[in-house]
Length: 412
Ligand SMILES: CC(C)(COP(=O)(O)OP(=O)(O)OC[C@H]1O[C@@H](n2cnc3c(N)ncnc32)[C@H](O)[C@@H]1OP(=O)(O)O)[C@@H](O)C(=O)NCCC(=O)NCCS
Image 1 (tube, protein in one colour):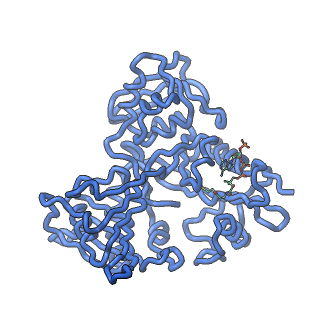
Image 2 (image 1 turned 135 degrees about the horizontal axis):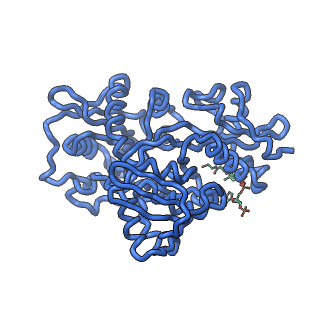
Image 3 (image 1 turned 30 degrees about the vertical axis):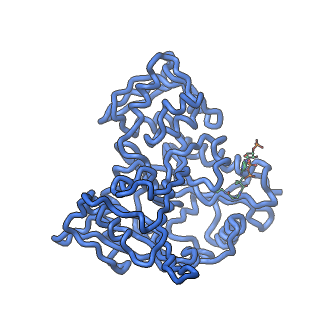
């Protein structure tokens, strides 16, 4: 019988069974380039598998990532591959996986923060995860999506390029811009390989991914964008295509505007969509008609503070903070109790204390505000944060906020 106590890393030889088990649960037929051998981003020593006889009945994994947080970058455990076979659901296997992952991260003093994309929003709260970033998920009618006449698109050029030229230039731009965006993740060559793989099965009826670069007149690349086209025609013969925008990044406002001027000007498009776009995309403020933007924001990257002291010490705080938090964490009891946080824009320190608390809150709430995109004041208004010292929530909400909204442009 498959007892979760026997969860263990999978071997390379066992990978095909592990991968097939994941595909099955996610409702996919096994396929793609990594059915027989793991992809280069896979870290099998950080995987967990549960076997019932020869059969893999549960899977999980962790990617070692580097996550941007307010004012810093921290190592983050990117939780992935979480499945339990329909035959073995609701017997505590996921709970055992979460237990094992978080215990190991804590005991081995690995990443102070864990992050994941949730297939369903009802799964991970009980384990202390909370949405820490949001995606804009917007769409609009191409005819109405026009830039304001006063927008400065600079003097650079937007060029459609082959992936071989795109990749190193985009990687350099990304590595520069991602550090200032909480929620963004570092990408080494393996991650760029994965991002740009563009398997036909992942195109969802669209074209191959198109790649564009924004180049200044001196030849320096300062921005990039990706998209797919979905051509279509109405019964009356009118163009009815869809433009699926991927990632748009630029080092300058003019470069950003120029990339969007290009994207919004593509012919034969009726609908423009950007599924993973940031929740507070500057594009909204570039549009002549902001109501052309129809957004349906939803949770994106979920965050869990694995070790409160190390995690809170690692980020920066735009306003000075010197408060005691009483944290309730039933799943990871090493976090449970009082923590003194002292922080400011250039440094922070968080440690255990016996002092009386200023604020009482759960680990979910603390994890939610970690990237700076959720306000402690909002959580207080929702009854999820208790203020003991008058004014403490206002102070803490200000110190935990961050001028750049969190955004994770990459699902993993
Ligand atoms: C989600 C999934 C991993 C849960 O596995 P599981 O082994 O059945 O979970 P557990 O038995 O440990 O459940 C723990 C608790 O979470 C609850 N729970 C589990 N899945 C849930 C879901 N999808 N929605 C709401 N609650 C859920 C259980 O009811 C249980 O609560 P209880 O202790 O109060 O009874 C499994 O259903 C699955 O593989 N789903 C499809 C793939 C998927 O969504 N993976 C997540 C990718 S991010």
